Length: 446
Image (cartoon, rainbow, N blue to C red):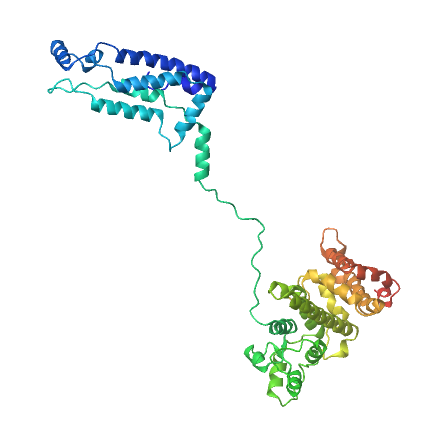
């Protein structure tokens, strides 16, 4: 029995562990008594015994005639004390031996045995005294070795291995910081929405694609105001100056005015211009807060945003009712002016009047709602804008060129007309005005 018996590892109870340890220690005690017993020997008797035994006698045969080993006697006493210990003492012994700072009992016994062997007298000058066999010297050391507890190993590894904590979910990103003063940023936003400027240098740098309002810039210089930023508090002035530009006017002596008029989009109506401005404005409502400006500046931008929106909706409503308010290109069958300019947006919101719509499809119900609630007379909008628009939808449905496809169950022509009605009634403001169209003269002739 060279190491701890297998029964030690199979009995988890402290009492059973003590019983098994007692049995094991009794066996080791008998072996220790056999090793320590016998008559005391002298160097001369050891030499005579070695001479009589002959060269074939193994070294272990002389162990029975050797004097008692002090280290073995110390290990015997240690084993007897362990055998008499109770379960609580065994547990305490196991805990103390598992601590690295305190030396174990087996280590003390091994050190004592090594010291005793080094101090023992030699048998003769010609041959050293044979040392005990490895099995007998290792036995006392292994007898006192406790079974390591898995809990202590797990706790030790848990304390030494750092656990990386995952990053917190939903952590907000660092707020943006403004890159320029608020007044400059505000002027740039309005300039981008209306596509106008009061700076001639900026218009020239953009190859006149940004419309230079020459008269407004002259008025600002006369008042001693800078022409670097737009006068955002005068939205009406900016819109009137832009809508009053006539691309067909060629009688002018100003090279700047000629450059401005030549750069205007060909055939663009006032309604088309205002629709483009409306589509660029809507997503900019929270722009100031996203840019990192102070709450007061963000609130000021909301006021400017509403002022620009009210100006766009107001002039668009008036132009739809009276298309002759500002210079307009000559209407044609393919390009009408007035309320019928909204017809392509109703029938094909993705494309509108061209390859790409001036207004995103999701913005059309918002626009109709703003037009219906603008002013104090919604019935006027229903009569002058909504009625001719819906009459054109139904007339187009019954045209001979599209009648067969629109009335076919397998065709998809009817779907766009049903979608047009759905887009008009999607807003509760315009849906409430549909009931006013029953006796209108436009609907009666459609």
